[in-house]
Length: 225
Image 1: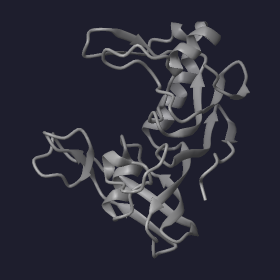
Image 2: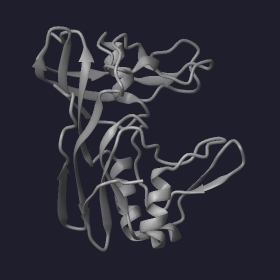
Image 3: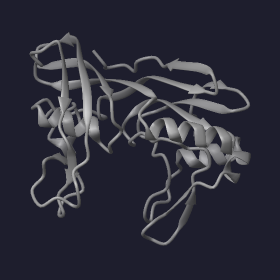
Protein backbone atom coordinates (compact mmCIF):
# COMPACT_ATOMS: atom_id res chain seq x y z
CA UNK A 1 0.00 0.00 0.00
CA UNK A 2 1.27 3.46 -0.92
CA UNK A 3 0.06 6.46 1.07
CA UNK A 4 1.86 9.74 0.31
CA UNK A 5 3.67 11.30 3.28
CA UNK A 6 3.57 15.08 2.89
CA UNK A 7 5.34 16.00 6.14
CA UNK A 8 7.18 14.26 8.95
CA UNK A 9 9.14 15.29 12.04
CA UNK A 10 9.76 13.81 15.49
CA UNK A 11 6.19 14.57 16.62
CA UNK A 12 3.84 13.93 13.71
CA UNK A 13 3.42 12.42 10.28
CA UNK A 14 0.98 14.02 7.84
CA UNK A 15 -0.53 11.85 5.10
CA UNK A 16 -2.59 12.35 1.96
CA UNK A 17 -5.02 9.44 2.28
CA UNK A 18 -6.31 8.12 -1.05
CA UNK A 19 -9.98 7.43 -1.58
CA UNK A 20 -10.78 3.75 -1.04
CA UNK A 21 -8.36 3.24 1.86
CA UNK A 22 -10.06 2.28 5.12
CA UNK A 23 -8.53 3.64 8.33
CA UNK A 24 -8.49 0.45 10.40
CA UNK A 25 -9.88 -3.10 10.34
CA UNK A 26 -13.59 -3.54 10.94
CA UNK A 27 -15.69 -6.56 11.89
CA UNK A 28 -14.50 -9.72 10.08
CA UNK A 29 -12.44 -7.69 7.59
CA UNK A 30 -9.11 -8.84 6.18
CA UNK A 31 -8.22 -6.00 3.77
CA UNK A 32 -5.10 -3.88 4.18
CA UNK A 33 -5.70 -0.62 6.05
CA UNK A 34 -4.00 2.64 6.95
CA UNK A 35 -3.15 1.07 10.32
CA UNK A 36 -1.15 -1.63 8.50
CA UNK A 37 0.77 1.09 6.64
CA UNK A 38 1.59 2.85 9.92
CA UNK A 39 2.64 -0.38 11.68
CA UNK A 40 5.12 -1.08 8.89
CA UNK A 41 6.59 2.43 8.70
CA UNK A 42 6.17 3.77 12.25
CA UNK A 43 5.95 0.82 14.68
CA UNK A 44 7.07 2.89 17.67
CA UNK A 45 3.87 4.96 17.65
CA UNK A 46 1.90 1.85 18.58
CA UNK A 47 3.20 2.10 22.13
CA UNK A 48 0.53 4.82 22.50
CA UNK A 49 -2.45 3.45 24.43
CA UNK A 50 -5.12 3.90 21.77
CA UNK A 51 -7.28 0.98 20.71
CA UNK A 52 -10.77 -0.18 19.81
CA UNK A 53 -12.55 -3.49 20.34
CA UNK A 54 -14.51 -4.76 17.35
CA UNK A 55 -17.79 -6.65 17.58
CA UNK A 56 -15.98 -9.76 16.31
CA UNK A 57 -13.85 -9.63 19.48
CA UNK A 58 -10.60 -8.35 18.02
CA UNK A 59 -8.68 -5.56 19.74
CA UNK A 60 -7.20 -3.16 17.17
CA UNK A 61 -4.32 -0.88 18.12
CA UNK A 62 -4.64 2.52 16.46
CA UNK A 63 -1.28 3.98 17.47
CA UNK A 64 -1.16 7.74 16.98
CA UNK A 65 -4.36 8.07 14.95
CA UNK A 66 -6.27 11.03 16.39
CA UNK A 67 -8.95 11.51 13.72
CA UNK A 68 -10.46 9.56 10.86
CA UNK A 69 -11.64 9.94 7.29
CA UNK A 70 -14.29 7.69 5.76
CA UNK A 71 -13.12 5.02 3.31
CA UNK A 72 -14.19 7.02 0.24
CA UNK A 73 -13.01 10.39 1.56
CA UNK A 74 -9.52 11.37 0.46
CA UNK A 75 -7.19 14.00 1.83
CA UNK A 76 -5.02 15.28 4.64
CA UNK A 77 -4.72 13.47 7.95
CA UNK A 78 -2.30 13.98 10.86
CA UNK A 79 -0.98 11.13 13.03
CA UNK A 80 0.92 11.59 16.30
CA UNK A 81 4.24 9.86 16.94
CA UNK A 82 4.33 10.37 20.73
CA UNK A 83 1.86 10.09 23.60
CA UNK A 84 2.34 13.75 24.52
CA UNK A 85 1.51 15.00 21.03
CA UNK A 86 -1.33 12.48 20.71
CA UNK A 87 -2.95 13.90 23.86
CA UNK A 88 -2.43 17.48 22.68
CA UNK A 89 -3.96 16.86 19.26
CA UNK A 90 -6.80 14.77 20.70
CA UNK A 91 -7.74 17.67 22.97
CA UNK A 92 -7.81 20.06 20.00
CA UNK A 93 -10.11 17.74 18.06
CA UNK A 94 -12.33 17.35 21.13
CA UNK A 95 -12.71 21.09 21.70
CA UNK A 96 -12.97 21.82 17.94
CA UNK A 97 -10.00 24.21 17.89
CA UNK A 98 -8.49 22.39 14.92
CA UNK A 99 -9.71 23.85 11.61
CA UNK A 100 -10.60 21.36 8.88
CA UNK A 101 -11.55 22.40 5.36
CA UNK A 102 -13.12 20.05 2.83
CA UNK A 103 -14.25 20.39 -0.75
CA UNK A 104 -17.13 18.44 -2.23
CA UNK A 105 -19.14 18.13 -5.41
CA UNK A 106 -22.83 18.12 -4.51
CA UNK A 107 -25.96 17.52 -6.54
CA UNK A 108 -27.94 20.44 -7.94
CA UNK A 109 -27.27 24.17 -7.89
CA UNK A 110 -26.86 25.52 -4.38
CA UNK A 111 -28.47 28.98 -4.40
CA UNK A 112 -26.80 30.87 -1.55
CA UNK A 113 -23.11 31.76 -1.85
CA UNK A 114 -22.25 31.47 1.86
CA UNK A 115 -24.31 30.07 4.72
CA UNK A 116 -24.21 27.98 7.88
CA UNK A 117 -26.03 24.71 8.54
CA UNK A 118 -26.85 24.45 12.24
CA UNK A 119 -28.76 21.19 12.57
CA UNK A 120 -28.30 18.62 15.38
CA UNK A 121 -27.56 15.05 14.33
CA UNK A 122 -28.46 11.63 15.68
CA UNK A 123 -29.17 8.09 14.57
CA UNK A 124 -32.53 6.39 14.34
CA UNK A 125 -32.57 3.17 16.37
CA UNK A 126 -33.05 1.18 13.16
CA UNK A 127 -30.60 3.07 10.93
CA UNK A 128 -26.82 3.55 11.13
CA UNK A 129 -26.92 6.80 9.12
CA UNK A 130 -26.73 10.19 10.80
CA UNK A 131 -29.90 12.24 10.41
CA UNK A 132 -31.11 15.69 11.34
CA UNK A 133 -33.78 15.32 14.03
CA UNK A 134 -34.39 11.58 13.41
CA UNK A 135 -37.56 9.97 14.68
CA UNK A 136 -37.04 7.62 17.62
CA UNK A 137 -33.34 8.59 18.03
CA UNK A 138 -30.70 6.65 19.94
CA UNK A 139 -30.02 8.90 22.92
CA UNK A 140 -29.69 12.67 22.70
CA UNK A 141 -29.07 14.60 19.49
CA UNK A 142 -25.64 16.22 19.19
CA UNK A 143 -24.94 19.75 18.03
CA UNK A 144 -23.60 19.90 14.46
CA UNK A 145 -22.57 23.06 12.59
CA UNK A 146 -21.13 23.33 9.07
CA UNK A 147 -20.05 26.43 7.15
CA UNK A 148 -20.70 26.26 3.39
CA UNK A 149 -19.08 28.37 0.67
CA UNK A 150 -19.78 28.06 -3.05
CA UNK A 151 -16.71 27.65 -5.27
CA UNK A 152 -18.32 26.92 -8.64
CA UNK A 153 -21.78 26.16 -10.03
CA UNK A 154 -22.06 23.68 -12.89
CA UNK A 155 -25.09 22.53 -14.92
CA UNK A 156 -26.37 20.01 -12.36
CA UNK A 157 -23.73 20.05 -9.61
CA UNK A 158 -22.00 22.57 -7.35
CA UNK A 159 -18.42 22.58 -6.07
CA UNK A 160 -18.46 23.68 -2.44
CA UNK A 161 -16.07 24.34 0.41
CA UNK A 162 -17.21 22.81 3.70
CA UNK A 163 -15.85 23.76 7.12
CA UNK A 164 -17.19 21.61 9.98
CA UNK A 165 -17.28 23.58 13.23
CA UNK A 166 -18.11 20.36 15.07
CA UNK A 167 -16.81 16.87 14.34
CA UNK A 168 -19.75 14.48 14.18
CA UNK A 169 -19.57 11.19 12.29
CA UNK A 170 -20.77 11.69 8.68
CA UNK A 171 -21.62 15.31 9.55
CA UNK A 172 -20.89 16.78 6.11
CA UNK A 173 -22.65 13.95 4.30
CA UNK A 174 -25.77 14.22 6.49
CA UNK A 175 -25.89 18.02 6.40
CA UNK A 176 -25.65 18.26 2.61
CA UNK A 177 -28.43 15.70 2.24
CA UNK A 178 -30.51 17.63 4.78
CA UNK A 179 -30.45 20.77 2.59
CA UNK A 180 -31.31 18.76 -0.52
CA UNK A 181 -27.83 18.62 -2.08
CA UNK A 182 -26.26 15.22 -1.31
CA UNK A 183 -22.60 14.71 -2.10
CA UNK A 184 -22.16 13.14 -5.54
CA UNK A 185 -21.62 9.38 -5.31
CA UNK A 186 -22.86 9.15 -1.72
CA UNK A 187 -25.55 6.54 -2.35
CA UNK A 188 -26.06 5.86 1.37
CA UNK A 189 -27.08 9.48 1.88
CA UNK A 190 -29.31 9.81 -1.16
CA UNK A 191 -27.09 10.68 -4.13
CA UNK A 192 -28.63 9.81 -7.49
CA UNK A 193 -25.55 10.65 -9.59
CA UNK A 194 -23.21 7.73 -10.25
CA UNK A 195 -19.53 8.21 -9.42
CA UNK A 196 -16.51 6.00 -8.86
CA UNK A 197 -16.19 7.52 -5.38
CA UNK A 198 -17.88 9.84 -2.93
CA UNK A 199 -16.82 13.32 -4.04
CA UNK A 200 -15.56 14.55 -0.67
CA UNK A 201 -11.92 15.57 -0.07
CA UNK A 202 -10.16 16.83 3.07
CA UNK A 203 -8.25 19.76 1.60
CA UNK A 204 -6.67 21.63 4.50
CA UNK A 205 -5.84 21.08 8.18
CA UNK A 206 -4.69 23.65 10.76
CA UNK A 207 -3.55 22.85 14.32
CA UNK A 208 -0.98 23.70 16.98
CA UNK A 209 1.74 21.75 18.75
CA UNK A 210 2.94 23.69 21.73
CA UNK A 211 3.19 27.30 20.55
CA UNK A 212 3.84 26.39 16.91
CA UNK A 213 1.13 26.65 14.26
CA UNK A 214 0.91 24.05 11.51
CA UNK A 215 -1.07 24.16 8.28
CA UNK A 216 -1.15 21.51 5.57
CA UNK A 217 -3.00 21.49 2.26
CA UNK A 218 -3.05 18.70 -0.30
CA UNK A 219 -3.79 18.88 -4.00
CA UNK A 220 -7.32 18.44 -5.27
CA UNK A 221 -7.98 15.07 -6.97
CA UNK A 222 -9.21 14.87 -10.54
CA UNK A 223 -12.94 15.27 -11.02
CA UNK A 224 -13.53 17.97 -8.42
CA UNK A 225 -14.85 20.70 -10.67
